[in-house]
Each structure stands twice: as C-alpha cells, then as structure tokens.
Image (tube, rainbow, N blue to C red; front, side, top):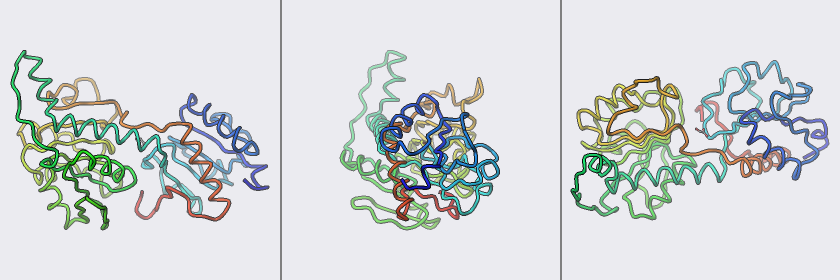
Length: 315
Ligand code: GLV
C-alpha cells in the first residue's frame, strides 16, 4: 500500500471462519497491513479499514481514523449511514463469488418455475401423474427488479436460456437484449409484462414494503415471485393473500422479515412457497479479500472505488 499503511490496521468483523481465509490472503498479498479479526482490534486509533457485516454502533467514536468501510455482503442496509462520518467511503461487496452464487440461485428458481417443478412436487405428494404442457423459454417473461451488478449478471445468464428478459430500475438503463423500464412511470408496464418477477433491489426507504398488494395486482394473474432482496421489501400478509387468491402462483423466498420466521408463521408451511434461509448467495472469502485489496490499491492511487455506495441514493 503506502508508508501510511505500515501503521494501518485492517479490521475484519464478520464470520471468523471466513476471516481466517481473508487473513491468509492479506498475509500473502499485503503483509505490511496489520490484519486483525474482531474482537482483536489492537489500537483503535490505527484502524484505517474496517470490513464488517454488522458494524459496531459507535464506529465514528471508536475508530476516529477510519479511511474506508467495506461491507462484507452485497447489501449495505445494515449500516446506519447517518452514524458514519461523511468523509468515510462505504463500499459494498461486488465479488465474483457473490455474483456466481446469485446467478445460480435465480437461474435455479426461474427454471424450476418455468418447468413447473413446484406443481410436480405437489402432484408427487398425492401420487398424481399429470403432464403439464411444456412452454418455450421465449414465451416466458422474466422481469428483474433492480439492475445493479447482481441484476445485470442474472439477466445476462437468463438470456442464454432464451427467456424473454426485462428489467426495471429507478433510473433508465440500456441493456442489450433486455427490455428495460424505469421510474414510477415504467413500473406498471414492466409488471404487466412479467410472468416471473425477480426482486434484486437494494433496501432503501423507497423500496421498503414495495412487494405489496398493489404491485402483485399489477402482475399478470398467476405470475410468480423469486425474492432474493431483503425481507423488508415484502409485505408477507399481502403475499399470502395474493397466493391464496391465485394472483401469485408460486413464491421462492430466500429472505424474510424477521429471519428466521417465528414458529408457526404461515409462510413456513404454505404449499406454494419455497423458503430458503438467506443462502441465495454468500461472499466467498478468498475472492472477496482479493477484491478488497484491489480496492485498497485504488484508494491509494486516488482511483474510484469499485462498489462505492452513493449515500444520497442509499445503495
Ligand atoms: C447478502 O444478503 C448480502 O448482502 O451479501
């Protein structure tokens, strides 16, 4: 890094098992950095870089010389942006492991829905043998809410199967081979032409509760949901009503609010819900540490950081 880094501590505060792999990568690639795993923080005044999943409450007071804060996950909604000094850049995790994991989970879910796997599971449970007409991928419209690095990567892979792909984001985007929509005005047209809706939105004040009755009603009847955003995007009561009314056909949920759901919650046992415990994608420690080191070099060289969060937008 630079001379200043002889004095600098990089503090890691997330799963300690994965932290050991980060430590190995740092020892190999940047031995001049004093890499530490929480709670072994050393001298807090030396903590220049912090990578955290759940940050300490008092970051600003505790680490007065913090230069960059890294999220160890793709989301940054666990950070209180107001409690973070304005001059400290916040960087979300954009690393190949997270992207590949998300592609796998979403492609798996979309293919399962496309090929009617939930219906066949139900049929099997009652020893019923009933083929359902196979549709072409081109006739299935998949719409991704959120066109950040994950949304775009997922769409690029879905396109290879020949699905009719669309995407919606807050501001206009152009993506080859994808019908794109933006803003409040574009949302209704986007939803009206979506058979499988994938939620990959960041959680912000604007998107909290966005997966609600009004949005479900704007989808074609029987459309399905793949939710890999955050639990708080979803109004679960609205989803249960939409499922029971047949407005939503099936829902694959990797996130809930709270996590885990309380015992007996209706989503646990709903026959049209597939629930997974927030495992759609996980940061892979080796590639994550390398991406962070690359960003440290960028920071030293005054280059833009990859995954830098725009605090005004909240993602
Ligand atoms: C997981 O949800 C993440 O933000 O990486």
